[in-house]
Length: 88
Image 1: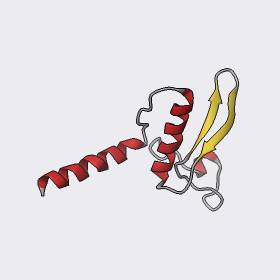
Image 2: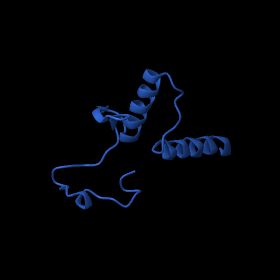
Image 3: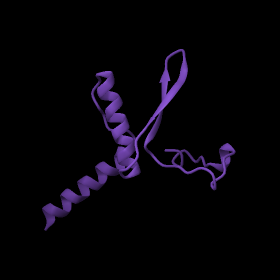
Image 4: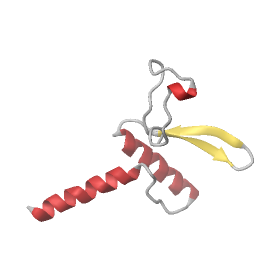
């Protein structure tokens, strides 16, 4: 998402030697309070890490999990795999 928006580490004053961009972590924001913490997961593909965080937060909040923006490439890959299986 960071890169999709045209941002970079350096555009935010951060060094690529000290920081990296990977999914798997999200800020925890509370209305009228701001960011109160963060939740992160590591060990899967970075997109799947991010999706697991989103799914867990949805479960905790009791709301339906909907695919986030980062899940789009995964959904596309899954459809492509299904098409390959159908074609062969």
